[in-house]
Length: 132
Figure 1 (cartoon, rainbow, N blue to C red):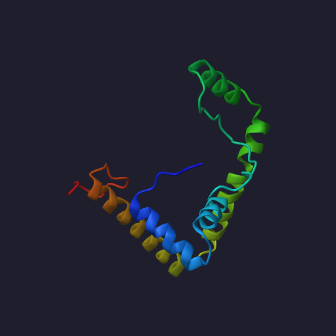
Figure 2 (tube, rainbow, N blue to C red):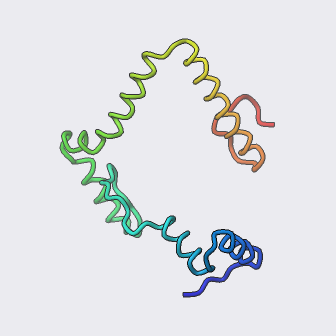
């Protein structure tokens, strides 16, 4: 296997490998082992996955999902529902200070997301009046 890397990337990899005390091959191997685990965790998808499927296959997958018994749909969505319920339980017991802090964090998040989109000229996710 060979990789075509820019001279800048090659230099950085050589530097990082030397700093880690290993050769370049070992360093890249370690990076890839961390970035690409041997086996992805098996998790059922609660919705149809459409990669590399024909339109007929996509329609069939959607119809199969829509026609699942309600118990199966509930089973597939149970982890997400449990997470959301836990968040609601935490929010129900929050103090006014915690609520104010959460609101401030949410506003800061929205402003950061919008600012990045303003810079790139994209549509704002959280409109806050006329775009600048």
